[in-house]
Length: 131
Image (cartoon, rainbow, N blue to C red; front, side, top):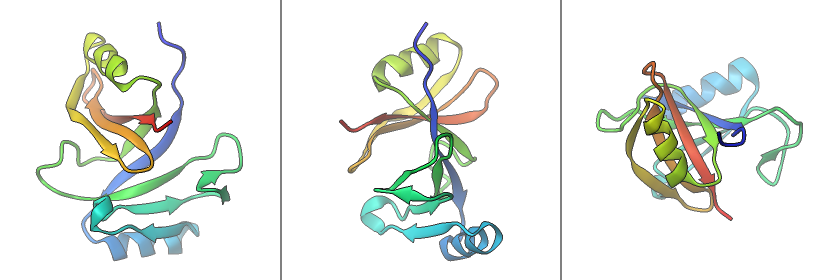
Protein backbone atom coordinates (compact mmCIF):
# COMPACT_ATOMS: atom_id res chain seq x y z
CA UNK A 1 0.00 0.00 0.00
CA UNK A 2 1.38 3.47 -0.85
CA UNK A 3 1.87 6.12 1.80
CA UNK A 4 -1.07 8.55 2.06
CA UNK A 5 -1.21 11.11 -0.77
CA UNK A 6 -2.68 14.48 0.27
CA UNK A 7 -5.33 16.54 -1.50
CA UNK A 8 -3.46 19.69 -2.52
CA UNK A 9 -5.70 21.56 -4.95
CA UNK A 10 -9.17 21.63 -6.49
CA UNK A 11 -10.40 22.55 -9.96
CA UNK A 12 -13.73 23.39 -11.53
CA UNK A 13 -14.76 24.07 -15.13
CA UNK A 14 -16.06 27.44 -16.28
CA UNK A 15 -18.05 28.56 -19.31
CA UNK A 16 -17.33 32.28 -18.73
CA UNK A 17 -14.04 33.01 -16.96
CA UNK A 18 -14.82 36.59 -15.96
CA UNK A 19 -18.26 35.67 -14.62
CA UNK A 20 -16.90 32.69 -12.65
CA UNK A 21 -13.99 34.69 -11.21
CA UNK A 22 -16.31 37.50 -10.13
CA UNK A 23 -18.66 35.00 -8.49
CA UNK A 24 -15.94 33.55 -6.24
CA UNK A 25 -14.48 36.98 -5.53
CA UNK A 26 -17.89 38.36 -4.51
CA UNK A 27 -19.28 35.30 -2.75
CA UNK A 28 -16.19 34.16 -0.84
CA UNK A 29 -13.58 36.93 -1.07
CA UNK A 30 -11.18 34.74 -3.04
CA UNK A 31 -8.43 36.35 -5.08
CA UNK A 32 -8.28 35.36 -8.75
CA UNK A 33 -5.51 35.49 -11.30
CA UNK A 34 -6.33 34.94 -14.95
CA UNK A 35 -3.64 33.07 -16.84
CA UNK A 36 -3.16 33.46 -20.58
CA UNK A 37 -3.53 31.07 -23.50
CA UNK A 38 -0.05 29.64 -22.86
CA UNK A 39 -1.45 28.29 -19.55
CA UNK A 40 -4.72 27.07 -21.05
CA UNK A 41 -6.72 30.16 -19.99
CA UNK A 42 -6.64 28.82 -16.44
CA UNK A 43 -7.85 31.00 -13.55
CA UNK A 44 -5.99 30.58 -10.27
CA UNK A 45 -8.10 30.81 -7.11
CA UNK A 46 -6.48 31.86 -3.85
CA UNK A 47 -8.89 30.78 -1.14
CA UNK A 48 -6.60 31.56 1.78
CA UNK A 49 -3.58 33.59 2.77
CA UNK A 50 -0.59 32.57 0.68
CA UNK A 51 3.15 33.08 0.52
CA UNK A 52 5.07 32.22 -2.65
CA UNK A 53 1.75 30.95 -4.12
CA UNK A 54 1.36 28.39 -1.31
CA UNK A 55 -1.19 28.44 1.54
CA UNK A 56 0.35 29.53 4.84
CA UNK A 57 -2.08 27.59 7.07
CA UNK A 58 -1.95 23.80 7.38
CA UNK A 59 -4.90 22.03 5.82
CA UNK A 60 -5.95 24.89 3.55
CA UNK A 61 -5.70 24.63 -0.24
CA UNK A 62 -6.12 26.82 -3.27
CA UNK A 63 -7.69 25.92 -6.57
CA UNK A 64 -8.43 26.95 -10.08
CA UNK A 65 -10.92 27.16 -12.89
CA UNK A 66 -10.41 25.61 -16.31
CA UNK A 67 -12.36 26.25 -19.51
CA UNK A 68 -15.24 23.88 -20.18
CA UNK A 69 -14.46 22.09 -23.42
CA UNK A 70 -16.35 19.10 -24.72
CA UNK A 71 -13.14 17.33 -25.73
CA UNK A 72 -11.50 17.61 -22.27
CA UNK A 73 -11.39 14.28 -20.43
CA UNK A 74 -13.23 15.66 -17.40
CA UNK A 75 -15.81 18.45 -17.10
CA UNK A 76 -16.62 18.15 -13.40
CA UNK A 77 -15.11 19.60 -10.23
CA UNK A 78 -11.94 17.71 -9.31
CA UNK A 79 -9.85 17.27 -6.21
CA UNK A 80 -6.15 17.10 -7.05
CA UNK A 81 -4.06 14.54 -5.19
CA UNK A 82 -0.29 14.91 -4.89
CA UNK A 83 1.70 11.80 -5.83
CA UNK A 84 5.45 11.14 -5.82
CA UNK A 85 5.43 9.09 -9.05
CA UNK A 86 2.52 9.73 -11.41
CA UNK A 87 3.27 6.68 -13.56
CA UNK A 88 3.16 4.35 -10.54
CA UNK A 89 0.02 6.12 -9.25
CA UNK A 90 -1.70 5.68 -12.64
CA UNK A 91 -0.99 1.96 -12.44
CA UNK A 92 -2.39 1.79 -8.89
CA UNK A 93 -5.56 3.64 -9.98
CA UNK A 94 -6.09 1.17 -12.82
CA UNK A 95 -5.39 -1.86 -10.62
CA UNK A 96 -7.81 -0.56 -7.99
CA UNK A 97 -10.65 -0.35 -10.55
CA UNK A 98 -10.35 3.25 -11.72
CA UNK A 99 -9.73 4.69 -15.16
CA UNK A 100 -7.01 7.17 -16.09
CA UNK A 101 -8.28 9.80 -18.55
CA UNK A 102 -5.53 10.36 -21.11
CA UNK A 103 -1.82 10.87 -20.62
CA UNK A 104 -0.08 13.10 -18.08
CA UNK A 105 0.34 16.70 -19.21
CA UNK A 106 3.27 18.87 -18.18
CA UNK A 107 2.04 22.02 -16.42
CA UNK A 108 4.90 24.55 -16.70
CA UNK A 109 6.43 25.35 -13.33
CA UNK A 110 4.03 23.00 -11.54
CA UNK A 111 4.50 19.36 -12.55
CA UNK A 112 2.83 16.44 -14.35
CA UNK A 113 -0.99 16.22 -14.16
CA UNK A 114 -3.62 13.71 -15.26
CA UNK A 115 -7.33 13.28 -14.50
CA UNK A 116 -8.94 9.97 -13.58
CA UNK A 117 -12.22 8.40 -12.51
CA UNK A 118 -12.41 6.25 -9.40
CA UNK A 119 -14.26 2.94 -9.27
CA UNK A 120 -17.55 4.82 -8.65
CA UNK A 121 -17.16 7.17 -11.63
CA UNK A 122 -16.12 10.19 -9.52
CA UNK A 123 -13.65 12.55 -11.13
CA UNK A 124 -10.33 13.43 -9.54
CA UNK A 125 -6.81 14.25 -10.70
CA UNK A 126 -3.21 13.49 -9.77
CA UNK A 127 -0.24 15.84 -9.73
CA UNK A 128 3.41 14.87 -9.51
CA UNK A 129 4.95 18.16 -8.37
CA UNK A 130 7.94 19.45 -10.25
CA UNK A 131 11.12 18.92 -8.29
